[in-house]
Image (cartoon, rainbow, N blue to C red; front, side, top):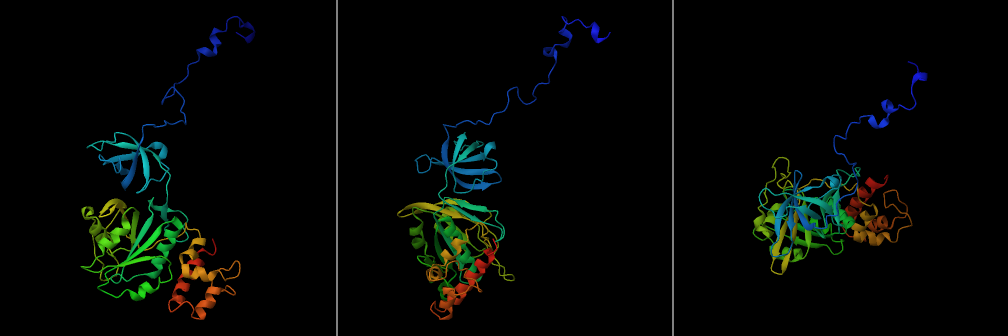
Length: 347
């Protein structure tokens, strides 16, 4: 039969409606990008993160405040959620055994402390959210204090808009005067000293009340010991310094928020794992000089566009150091500044 023999009135054999289509194996309705509003979500504080599970505090400061376990909603899989975050949760928020709630949103953050693997790596690693203070813990000896590491902490704190505090532990082993003189020019830096049997718990505690304070420091400096003294129920693991390498052992493996209770009120102690380096690849280079408040004041006399590097002509800081106007620690502080500025010079 040729096409000439086909009856135009008989089209049933070729009706498109009779064609069988394969159904959608996932659903009969197309997917939509619209997500539920979650009007019933509750606000909770992230206290810690462990292998994709978030310990959160529900109904903070209410008589029935309690902790619960939560997971991240699928739509937030690319959103970093860290200790200190205030999040919106739905589901079973009772905190009972076997219950699991779901994080569906992250509230706007007031601050974000970050670090990078090194100074050339601009991929940031978030340390904590919503902290307003940083307590830098160093040891007077065993391990030896490192001025330049503290300089990095100060820069990171300034970049995040966080007030820095400094405590020197193990002062019974060595006199910290020479070390602390390096920071004489840092305006407004609150300094505490601590020794075996003479830990200033009450003094430090008064500065924690009403604040969320992140504790940072090199491994083995006594940070966990200090945290346990301030928050006895914390029971953070403590370690020792290797007598061969002079390095401390990592005892805190995760960042956790702990409630501090003082005579005048409460606050948050955020304990972080010990680190041996603190990359500043994410930091605005303008904030490096600002962290050296004494040098920044002198730099106002520098020519416009002065880099403050060794080859910078007519640098007012270099002239002040050469003339001895910045004291005996001026050369060391200027060297530390130049090393940091040199790292970011080609960025």
